Image (tube, rainbow, N blue to C red; front, side, top):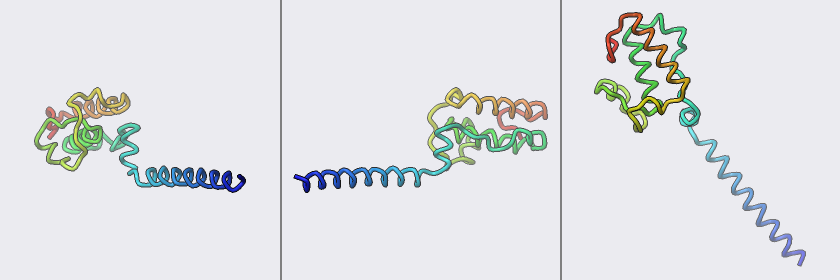
Length: 122
């Protein structure tokens, strides 16, 4: 009887150890970028630097944030620039977290103040 109990405990410990290893492996191999994406779309550039950036740089950062947030990019130029991004899931920026939408609003405001033209911001 004692041997049966010991065997049962040993089997439970082995199963627990296996689960622990599987969870550890899953966490170890999840890319930090994918983990960040699941929490929020982190800004690519400190907003304090927007004023020193060219229209082209502002456009690129905007598209980078949209691509990271899996918003479908509107222009062919943007789709080419971020062709390796994960597949988009929506045209609507509402899928982005509020802090990311605020970041984009600020970026676009700076771009407009600089006189950057339209969505291409050339």
